[in-house]
Image (cartoon, rainbow, N blue to C red; front, side, top):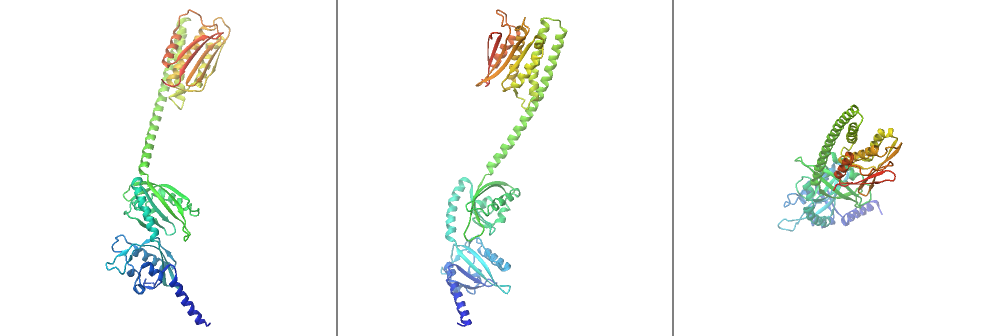
Amino acid sequence: MAGDDIQFLGERLREAVFEAAPHGYLIVDPDFIIVDVNQRYLDLTQARRQDLVGVCLFDAFPDNPGDPTADGVRNLRLSLETALATRRPHEMAVQKYDIPLRDDPDGSFEERYWKPLNTPVVRDGEVVALIHHVADVTEEVLFRRDQAIRLRSAQQLDDLAFWEYHPRTGTMYFSRAFSRMLGFPEREGTASAEDCFARIHADDRAAVRAAFDDVMDAPEHTTVSFIHRLLLPDGTTRWLSSQGELVRDHREALPRFVVVSIDVSESKRREEALAVALDERDRLLAQKEALLAEANHRIKNSLQLVSSILNMDARRAGAGEGRDRLERAAARVQAVSSVHEMLYRSEDVTTLAFGEYLRKLCAHLGGGDATGMGVVITCEAADVQLPADKAIALALVVNELVSNALKHAFTGLEKGRINVTTRLEEDTLVLEVADDGAGKSTGAEPGLGTRIVHGLVGQLGASIKTEDAAPGHRAVVRTPMQEP
């Protein structure tokens, strides 16, 4: 077969393939005049060849005059101009582009949705034609619109909005609710992703982009989630919480993301108000603790002064009951002063580590008259935190019980031992002061120290029991840990 015959057959074959292609193809020249169209395109648009060839594309397919939001002509012209200028194919996002019903005397249009691809034909470095390839996605879009209707019903209750992000085309397809959230005119449709991202607060924008970029190579249905602020044109700030999934179309190298957002501005405002309230509470508590610490410091200094005066008077008084009373009064004041000193030095100025304090008190008591009497004072104290008022009362009880034992239990003895112990029994603190002395004398009138102990026990809502320790004497005070 001759070369001319082969070329002729090849051209006829290309024509046949173009005509029989299962997709719609339309060819325009650089001025967008329709040069050719295949049968599938005619079927999709319900047009006739003689109505299209030789006609400007935008005259053959104008915008629907009954749709004030129609932007198909503008978007298609921009895509064709982009392919013409770059000499590279330009794929468009899904477009709403209604087609005219040519046999309708009223000039009606039919709602249609398309996925266009515009490819330049280059010869000798010049674009000689453009191939306009379309896929009719009307059924898919209408199905999604039905879903959107259901979602909009939910949105009215839950402030939900849905949108799709297409990284490859740099576009977003969003619902009316999402358009409203972004402060755009309320409509459902496609817009530039950059315009949408521009509404995200500048401090959050990079994190939102990263949420998508980090999963570009992940498997399908990988989830993305993020919370971010919107800064609207009127200066107001809104918070959105968004979650979506990565979806891969077999035709596309890059994924798209289907996302649902909910307005959480009110929750965020409540959180911020709560945070402010908590900060204010912490500030007031810190101020209160500082004031309490200062108060404890001043009380400690005042009590130490009183104790010093009493001790000075005791030294000036001669030996006898008067001196003994002054020294015991000074010891009582010193016991209270030491509690306030520990509170002042503690980080918590409202409670006291009573076990630590009791060990220090017993060491102090054991270093006074007890040493000269050959009496050893031991302490086994449970580590518990007590409110300041309860700690002061128990400190005075211990001081009185130990002082009474030193005064009365070891008369005529060369040595002895006083054991101070505390333990927890469920919600009760048990304090025990026991000596191995001569025991309690019978028939003796209770002295001031005993009366003070019973008064403090009543103040604490506690109970006291005294008994023979064989040898010696034992006092057991049971104090409830919980306030009545």
